[in-house]
Length: 501
Image 1 (cartoon, rainbow, N blue to C red):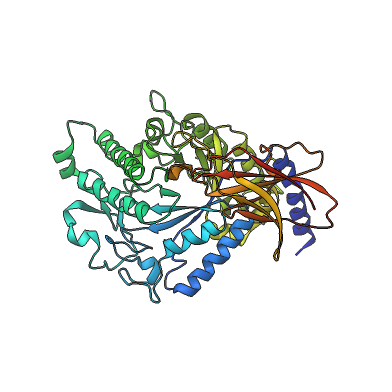
Image 2 (tube, rainbow, N blue to C red):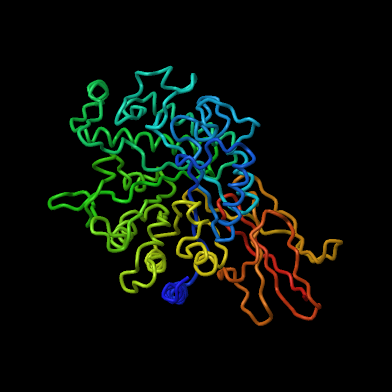
């Protein structure tokens, strides 16, 4: 490394704590990462190599404080899980419809591995896309081959026609099946609604519009209604199966470009739009309570001429706060872009400061997990040692459930063959929503204020009913506090125990 590069690196590292410490670390924050299949990172790896790759990623992400994984399991009406409706994905086995050999279920495996690390697992589906450009052969049980009239072709791809009610019912059936059979914490959709516009091509939905317009004259309004009907139906379907499973959407980063005379809230941007181009009325979904969180993809740099990150963060914080709001971050762009005020550093510190300064923003998600693991510009190191240096609980969602579980019972310290342990008993619960699923262990030195509001005192978030105490010589007094968390991380009252370590 040249001396100039070393000086720039040291300057960048010096700048990080200034930004990180200027705002207190939140006790509750969504800290997610997307793991996608469409980039082919798993294609043809086989079970052992794919599990090894994912294990490496999950271990590093855990170290970086990531507490939620969004895992792509349905990219083109296919499955990275055992589906009774759709074929195995070519992004898993190399050929659509080919069963993994040796057999395994990636979604089931990921849920188990994420939960073992204290992470949530949100199953990510693409709702309408049925074939990507790179797919040359469809499996015999692909839904298109059985119901061709329910799809349209556009720009080398196939899509479920959003204007057909039977397609909405089918997509809800897929989502409900995942939620019913798998212990997922969330069901997640990304930004693929009506297809991204392709130059010189029109969406071929004339016949559907004529047959199903229901008196709506404007084609754009009709398309937006179609997507909104799906969002509402998905929300209701998930609630009916498991009311604690969160439904989240990750829309494109621009809702609508502001223009004179428009009564639609718009940002000072010039780019592709959810409302006008993808026919996704995202603000309506939040206002109606049809989504449990929004995660707009703000992948641009601060100072971008067409879509400035700072402008968009503040816009979403102002207009989308009726539901929990998290920000999608592009790891590589952020690590490569120079800070506009301190060009010797990248933009990570300033973006994190902007995000955390907005009271309606409750966290972020990293695009994409493998990029975090690669640590460009010391991105992962900054998460681990600065921004995520203390654990965080998930943001509360009182509109789903606001009742906390009872506190842990019979908290006691016991010497065992495995060392000095703090034991407790799970609290009793009358319904699944009130069951304790995890526990938070806090530690306080003599003279420190005992409060569960400060995340710097959290030493563990665990699904076990014990914690191994770091015994030294038995001369130092500490107070340990244990609370219970339910499925939505409502936190119980505290159980306390004084020990000497």
